[in-house]
Length: 153
Length: 231
Image (cartoon, rainbow over all chains, first blue to last red; front, side, top):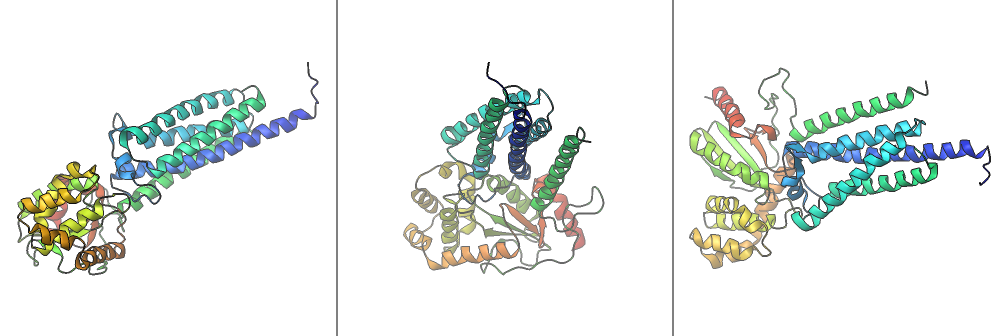
């Protein structure tokens, strides 16, 4: 049994709070991005991509909606859930960390599927979708790291 | 207080997110002054119309220059929503006729988003130099799906040129001519002066029509209202 320094406990809690705080902040980038995409999707217009070429192809593809609901809207909802859970976890609410890990894992798998669709089905990349993929990947890394650090939810 | 604080933060972010969405939605519809009463016309009620830069002259226009209603479209031949709008505008133009409605098309190719948009704009402008802009315009829009994925669109557009009776060699030369480039540039300059950022953007008597009002059943009441105001 490794001995635990009693003074280590507050610093570990602080580190975890910081990690979840960073997770909450990163999720805000995804939230802003997906809100923008949702509005653009609902406006239905072709928008100007500045880095990649393919925003309108991706946003007007059949994969951009789920039963008529914009996928970006679901993304915004997911990022908001992540933000809420990460904020609660940062404030020390119990069991929230594990729920957050589950949500982020689902988002990461969805991201992989969407990247596959862009690369091999639609053959176009939308820069805003790539930003969302980057944010989700970062969130996944942060949440896994936080879980490893805390060892429990 | 510490137990409540995270919920306050979450509520704040939710509110900020909803406000941002609302702001973006308004900015996207480019409605300078939203109608103050629910159910009123979504066309801006402001009387100040920005004339903007003149654009390419003469403009590609169908209908009488003295027609009381002018619809000016800034379009990109490769943009799918522009392709969807094409039959709507065509039906409206036929329905109202040249004495009531004038339809103007302005080039606004979204480069580099749409790799063939500029080539399509050049093809339409080159056809215009032989007096067949609208024939080529229709052909390109109606076959958007056929050339959109193509690697090289030139032979396809030359095929269209042949089918509408153009001198194909002249058409090929005009495609790269300075006059064609200049027309596209001038239309783009006009688009920027009017704040156009996306396609399709349509102006009804100089006032921008929100994108959501472009389906025929929403656009026609706006045209009727303009006709009533300018008998």
